[in-house]
Image (cartoon, rainbow, N blue to C red; front, top):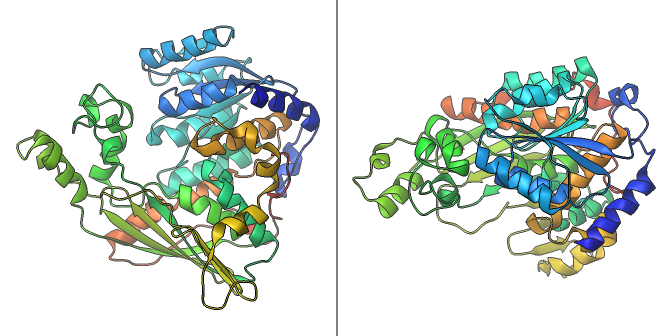
Length: 452
């Protein structure tokens, strides 16, 4: 942890004054880099507290405000700051709209939003209107209207926002991105990805612990089960697409020379959550009578302007091991994360898989080769360090982030579009062009640099 502090301090010095401008429109929004960033956190539940802990290791950040409507979470945040020897921040949370008072503080330059999904867009929009550089947890939006709200507010205010998709910084994902950029797979053709994660003990608990121990959700539950499960009751959609789609979209240059054109989605029947309630709570438990609208396995196929297809799988209500199901396939070969295997024509033995480890080590990303040891302990295998570092450095420079408002809109749009397609028996749904044609001219972000 101390080495992480030293790295962050040295990186802050090295990158002072840098302004990376990956979009055409962003050039008008750049300003000299700040040496120290004043950050407010909106939402300090489990995810927000993880961000808080990582911020406390930085010497180029001052945490000036915390906001949460749960007094217990505020007390945890204050205690962590006191233990780190930090000054007590301004506190907000007297009601659900008190975050607006946080956004009015001149002592806040940037905010990190880690609240329930239905608050993400409105808080991000309000932050941009207040001139605060906004980082928002995934997904960034729930409806097409909200997707457009993010884009329109960014363009109207000139203020940036970043979707905090940490899987884009996973070590194997960045190594494969390196291979893509070096042309190892040849011309890209097909991708698979998704979110395949048994979330039954995330969606239900006993009201005392955040994971499991009971089958309550909503008002009788705490943490994510108090709000997340309701989406499974009311929506038959891929409600959480970005962990898989974000990395693939970067590899396919979406919004930067390529774009999503349309999708079709299908859903299986939904039995997993009901079965879990009956098994854990009994058939007479009140929640055993709840009808869950969401299908257990949702499959979405996206067509892109450059002719690739992307298959996204959402599978969170049944017993299964975790996997994001990545597959990256081109004219010369492919990588599949399940099975940890790689095949490159002319380098692999014909018709036989290679273990992927040697390939991933050979093409290890410059960020991980340089700073991997400093990321240890940051959460999610180090990914959380890199995504937070990218947000902080982008905000200090007031430059467009690697995952911007257009990406947040396009990736999040899968949720409402998949919902519409499922409702209409797999009918294709067209993606809006959130860049209004600029995708044809926007250069790709420089994901291969070793700074952030």
